[in-house]
Image 1: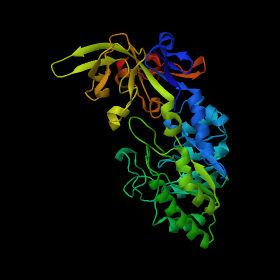
Image 2: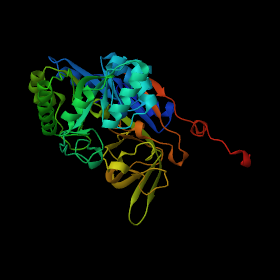
Image 3: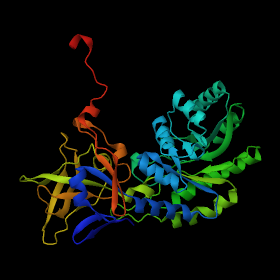
Image 4: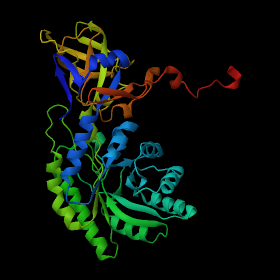
Length: 419
């Protein structure tokens, strides 16, 4: 469910007319619905009532500070994968004790910053990382709270580029080696073993892979307890999918029901890292038609949003529903490629898509763009990044100003021999 709907043939975000918003903010622009974000967070967290569960929003899905601040105000934490995300999360008011640090390539400076901030735990993804973190903590006179991210070798049955739990993926420690690696970690004086974690992929539309991964973690935890290593945190990652087109992912309630009994039996505090399921359908990308173009082979709709703004269609062949902001019922349907201004054949938002026959100057909305939209955007072709807007009822605010070309070029200079 989301709060983007037509009123008198005009598309609104909550109670804000998107055509009027576009006149003031310009396009392209990302627009987020606070009501949708709030509802999604509450539905997800309430599904796990009865368990000691901490919902750590996956910042990589949408790192806007306003979005993170809202999650924090609702009791959420943050799942981060870089020092930059740590800084953003803290600036947004996320308490350090609700921050989990994942990722395969943490630098010394990033480890130090997270230790000094006092985060909940690090998810360790390699034996070398474990040794390096122990040394960084020793240099600071601290103990690093850690879990080992176990790769359970579970097929998440999702797009190959967003599966993370197979033995061939770069993430985590092999499940068959994890017991021995926990024993080695227990010998390191500046690590505090707090938990076990896994994350098997993104945009999952079935519960079974989550249950399979939990089964394998349960066996490992039981074996560790027999060996005297008693862990208190169980981090099951994220990955629950959303509906972009015709997917039928499990609801948070169905997801929770499938896991609750076994989690309760393990008697551990549950950590969850949802991203897409919280923000995906809570945002759209607003764009304006620049031109229409006909060739003997195709009808093209050229818009001012491009692959640098939303790379998912080009990168993953992802589907996003695209609708006109002005719902004129009399418009015929056309089959078109909806493309951007980038100098790449792969610059498209949709291919062979049936859509209302929009014309130059019309607005379109690319739906379900709240996750992995702005966070994956770039300045390719020296295109400044889009503005971001938060809507709350009939109010709205720009929560990230549109980038300028001067900001894109900031830091550049000519070498002395060219000046």
